[in-house]
Length: 407
Image (cartoon, rainbow, N blue to C red; front, side):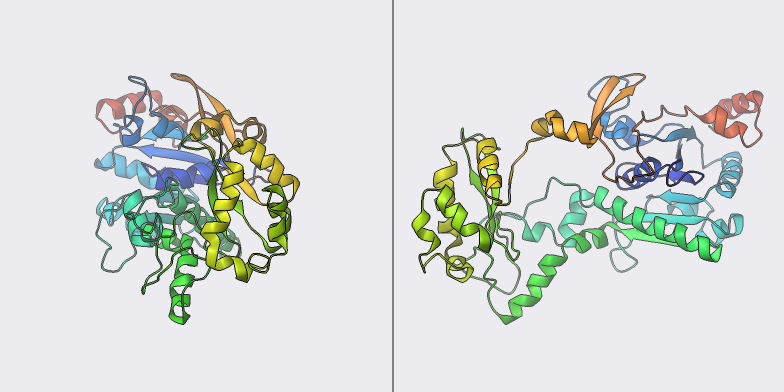
């Protein structure tokens, strides 16, 4: 049994923010039915690495789902949709603002069709001045606080490689959906769940808003910046937290031959010993966090003078042996090849009927009584027969619907 066994999700999402949400629900055991236009989710054809095969963009976001096709612009398609809604527990969509309403299914209508329905919408922005604007991953990063605080002080704002705008919003949506599902157990009623990409990124940038308010009381000592204006600055690889950190170079000097080191108060003495400067452990100019804060750049330079002649794995083992927090910068190639991640199910290989197999991420959620087996994403309309048969349609009915462009 899985955590969400018996829960049916009607997945009207596309691209990344929505599919990342519904894939998590599928991994938790929900029956996720991906409802696609007859032409399919646009990402089936985007960024293809193999001709005429669903792209990795699509396959890595739609595992463990079933697929049906339906033309929502046709009257027959809308009729079938009303029946699908009646059987669903959750409906998730990430169309542009008002798109589902224009199809003839505003929230009020959906409530009439199924009072127990949980209707989740992912949008770029909330209902304020930006409501009608289009949003993409990096636009959400730009308008949610991430880009202004990412990068080096003398450089431009930068996007992060982590998809905090799209997949980050998907995770937030899952939290809201599960809360609504739980509340339905108490009330018997469904409800509307709305998540905006800008809001999700803002939530993930809360520590920078913390520091914006701290600026009113003076410079941020934990930052390596020498001067401060009236906004939180970009601060390179500084942790900006209670414990200073930085990425220091390692041998042989490649683009990812770095290790990120955190210097805790209790870690300074063993670290000084390791880097060959044991006298700094008791030197009043270095011995305390307060003494080190004004010269964080010099402190990490001393560490780098030691690390630069050693590879990052040697540094990792040496520092961890002394209980010093650190982590090597792992490239995408290294992550896919990491045996530990494979053993943990964080990286999995999935068989596919057309491309053979591909590597993808496994579920980051681990429940002791609800294990996850990552299965292949569906082909376009692969489950039309079995799902529409559940609505009482015959093979002849399906053939007619296909001829008329309804499915």
